[in-house]
Length: 225
Image (cartoon, rainbow, N blue to C red):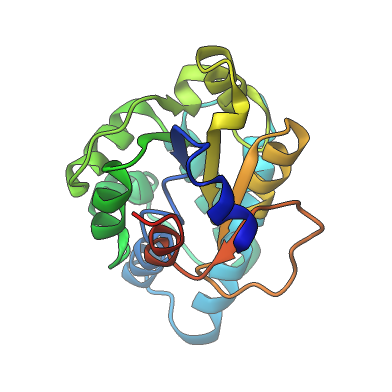
């Protein structure tokens, strides 16, 4: 990671994806699906399908993330033949504020905050992110949500909002787990990108990056924070 280490003093702003990078969305969604009665192989299969199903919904005309999650759950119930009671249609969004940070998140953020300004770019509604932010020990600025830009990553508006506010993109480092949602658009816009490979992916999908780390803590170590 010599290239990243050499550039550590160049960066002023670190922007983060939230869910999957800072917050363990997989634990949260798995817990909700288990509450709906899914177990074993079916639960695993639904989890495997969740990201691509949600991504397909997000490519449709903009709707709130609450609506995206409800539509995603409806499609998964149809495809995997399980029932979601009408009163539980919004269960994912109701339980989202309880999704926990990864174990290393807060310590790493506090270390990085001593050296850099920190921001969040998230596919979420403003109020849901506000409920999540109580789990963090640092503040973020800028914060850009899907509700703010009326679109979902990997579309460019989240990133363009930051570029417009922070004219020198070379001083911005985007940090995220998802190559699809974050790595690809960051590359398309010429933003520096670091992959937090929390789920041990093998395929970099030809995404240019300054580094790959198994955790946020490892990134903080590399940046000397």
